[in-house]
Image 1: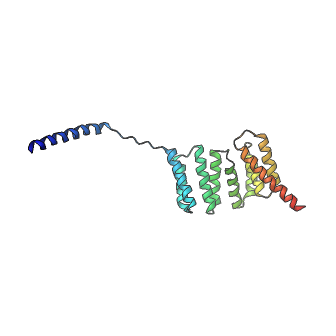
Image 2: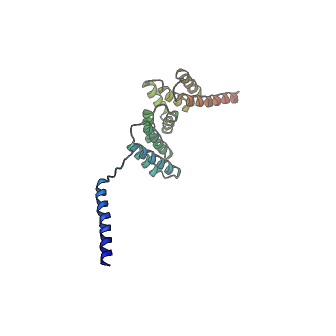
Image 3: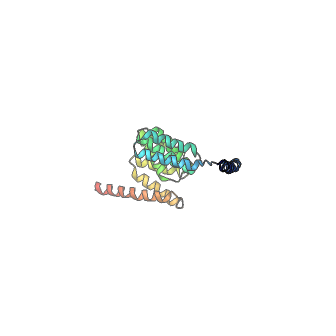
Length: 197
């Protein structure tokens, strides 16, 4: 019995000692992927938004922005945060987020529409129209100006400006979305003219 116990102890200690040597050689590497984690937080924010848990959604979108602040993807996070602020009645906070989304990725038409919506909810359309006209830097600024005209009820001016934008910038990624919007708005203008007759 003693011999069996000694042999078992030797075998056990051999495995134990060999394994201990290997444990020192094994190093564990964790890779933190901020972009992937930012996307996860954004998705969690969207889930909270669907569940009407606005505080949680805001925190998740803010985390997504903190993890990935300077990329095209962060424009989506800023836009989602802005939409949340609009939903809960804080258009002045939303305005800053939509403006940041446009800075990060200026070729997404929805961001411009959301920005102008935030102006409308604050009743500052006329003020912002003058601001954007005065500070116009490039053709993309015309999108905001045109949408402000539309929000002020001047749909004909809006359609004309956006149509001119599409003709002058046919190859931009944003142009197809604007063309679709112009067709929809033009139908509304035509319909309202027929009703007036």
